[in-house]
Length: 221
Length: 200
Image (tube, rainbow over all chains, first blue to last red):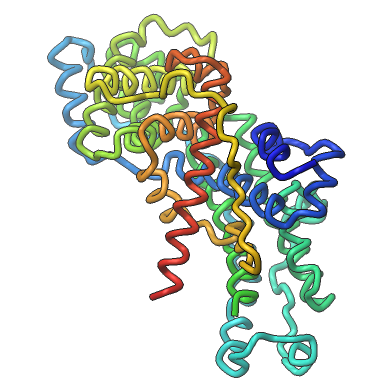
């Protein structure tokens, strides 16, 4: 399969499963592999843009005024609050997730400060800053490993040359991020109107994004 | 409903708010508005790229919803009903302004050169891991209107191609083609943006 042939089938490949012939081409062509990875990233990150902004208060004022003038508002009742999502375990998830990411960021900052050149394996051994997660597992879903997407697998292949301990940490953080996303998605399946859970899902995608950026920033220096 | 429920700060579910709104309850309308305003407004803003227009369209979408709320029977999710109405409001506005929604007869076949231009020795810099929301938002804003509409409806808002085709009045093939080209264009914009940042 040539690159041109692969590109013709590319739209079906994005967010889908490549055929054996396509996969064989991907395995041998970094350009096509990179293109597919980028398009998958764009498609998945687009979800972050949904429900990201809020209109000004003037919008509701105008709506209410029109509703009254049209006679659709006939009663004034005490203020009600929308039922909020209860699961505090999601709040614990968020806080728990920030700890290992913050720790990893601190390690990278220290390494860059004292070892500005790109780390090789020998340098990595000298850095006595083990990257360990300090966040206790507070949710059963953290123990299971969600299946890795094609994009995750390709991302992991880009860091395959890292030291084993670092690679294991990346994999662990990635599994945690995917489990977080899966939990939020499950909650939204039960109640798609849950605004709080929608925000949690956005946070989950952002936190996975932070993990990608952390690795890419480190490898680009 | 008991009198005990008519208390300040009482929590109201969406279903309860819908029923009360049908009876003209002002606060119930506000609950429904607060639950869905972000998604509706974000959709309008993505499609129009103008905050004033987006606010006008948000207002119009909710007004249409509230005028018709008496007919809502719960056969589909309320959010789906509202969202579809919002999309129609936006598309109608774009048509009134004669802005292109989707280019005509644009299909996948035709580009024989291909996207991948191989430069000997040039590193293949991947975007994966370097896309943040602000950069992606800026890139989406730079898309041609036709590409932007399809991208927003499919990748941001989650509509399927058959739904998009019905809403915007194009073929499914056209929708797929525009989406693919939108993603390719976004990739190009994001790479340029990253290169410019690296130079600074």
